[in-house]
Image 1 (cartoon, rainbow, N blue to C red):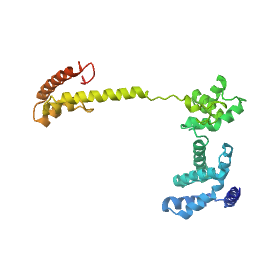
Image 2: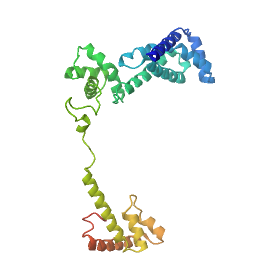
Image 3: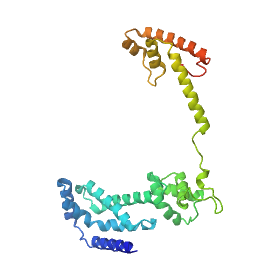
Image 4: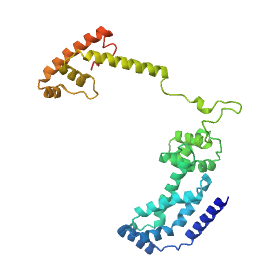
Length: 294
């Protein structure tokens, strides 16, 4: 409790200090912005941003109902304020407060979206707009349901925000639900957990082991059959049939000092030897997929 009291006192002191900072005239504001932009004058940056900390605090206060500490919201808003100062162009004759408001709000909203739930709530501009406006719009049309919306209301909100109707439905459902631990029991008198209902999308262990076993057996057969080839035949077959990036006849011909037609003939001859060796071991190699037919 003592730690919480100390923190609250520090927060109040910070807010009081920020609110007591003098307002800037437009001429002085422009002078500070120019000094920071052209000369990286940190004293000018500090005076400019300090004067508008009240704007950060005011905007952060509007997002307190999402259950996040005001101090964290102010910190994120301050990040937006610094970004605004880095990008502000004083020659556009726009007040810094007007320009900074968008950056401050955007930084705070991103923070809220990241921390409101352990599940990522919104990643697109449409989802972000829905998260921060859906409750207000539903109240405006007296739609206070538990996530189920009438088609008319869903269409009205989608049109009003310029987002797909499916996004409206998904966000309404998301906001009406709470996070649930996968380790939570299915029922009070049951030892089963929600995670027990998750489907394992991996292959069945037995199937995976059989495939690994078959793959290893095919590899041994091919290695044994390759022993029947000469060194040159072996090179051509490996480069032409057993690599992802097939080497052309012309390239192999230049490497071996022969024509590409001769390479084609050697490849054909080597394939005949491989088939003969594999037939003696396992049967037709094309049916078993041991030799690529491309």
